[in-house]
Every structure is written in C-alpha cells, then in structure tokens.
Length: 250
Image (cartoon, rainbow, N blue to C red):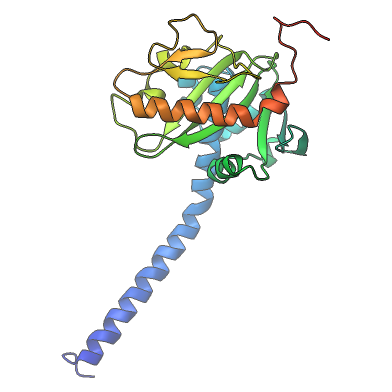
C-alpha cells in the first residue's frame, strides 16, 4: 500500500484510535475496583469523622482495609427510609459486605421533586445517627454528613466536602475544623422554619439552630445552608418524631 495515500492515512489513524481506545477501556476496567474501594473508604471516613468515632486525622491516616474494619466494629445498624420517614430497607454492615447510599445527586433531585427517595441512616454504637446532605455551592456540588445525638435533633458532629469551591474561602467548609465544630451542640428545629440557619450573624440572636456563615464565602455558605435545610426536611418525619425536651408530651 502506498504510505503516502489518503487511504493509508485514514486506515492508520483509525487503527491507532481503536488501539488507544481499547487500552484506555482496559485500563479503566482494571482501575475501577480500586477507585470504588477508595470512594467507599472516603465516604466511611467522612461519616465516622462526623460521628466522632475517631479524630479526622487518624481516619485519614488509616488504610482502606482498616477503615472498613473500624466501620464494621462501630456501626450498630444501617437502614434506608422513604419520603414518609419509615424504614424501607437495610444496608449491609459486615466488613465484607458494607453497603452505602453514596450517590447523593439523584436523591437530592428526588427530594426536591417530591418523588420517591431512598435515604440512608447510619446508627453507630455510640448512639449517634449519621445522615448525608448534598447541594450546590458556588462552583460545583457540596456535600457532607451530619451526626445527631440520640435525641435525633442535637448535632453531635459534621463533615463537609466540595468539588471545586474557592481555596481559602468556600473551601473552608472542608479545610477548617473550627467551622465544622461550630455545629456541635446546635439543634435542628424540626417543625419550624427554617430548620437550620447558616447565614451572616445567624448566631447573634442566640438561636440554637444557627451557625454564622464563613466570611467571604457567601455563596458557598448559602448553598450549604440550603442543602442542610433540604435534607433535614427530608428526614423530618423520621427524626421529628422525637419529643422536643422543651415541649410536654400529650
């Protein structure tokens, strides 16, 4: 074949593209189990950080296999609820069969559309129940985990993350422990509006369901605040059944 012909160029280019595509596909398949294992371990680290199982630094220093074991040793039960707040499924908690609901974007869409949802609740041996939250920050999605004390409304811990918020500003929701710690001891006002307030000077009035927004990160704080309220509302029928200590039982 004439190597200078157009036909040769087309055939050669096509073969190169096919070979490269095959190599990339094979590589992706080989890496997928490792990527999935890393994603699962990352989710477990964030959940257990919120639940105060171990200090965040220790969780991130541990290898994936160790994280699975720590989770299996500390989880009491994991289940899912529907829009009615009732349990509609269970999640595996054994080390070899840990199950998570960690693809939060579809659940977020379903919550906002008033559709069917499968929302996870992870209950640890220390009595803390962990739920996820998901929403939109300034440049991309923000998400995280909130742990409740046994009363189902007092926050025991949090962990927040993001895809692309501004370093030194919006990224502080993840990078700054002091911000996450501000939520500890705060309460979610189930049955009221807003359930939780994350805004400038939100704590000035002494409200227990409020945390001040991060200075200079208005849009990220707004997005995180909206995510908290959307997801807290989705769990209201489940956790809102707990009697408010300030109210008398009927």
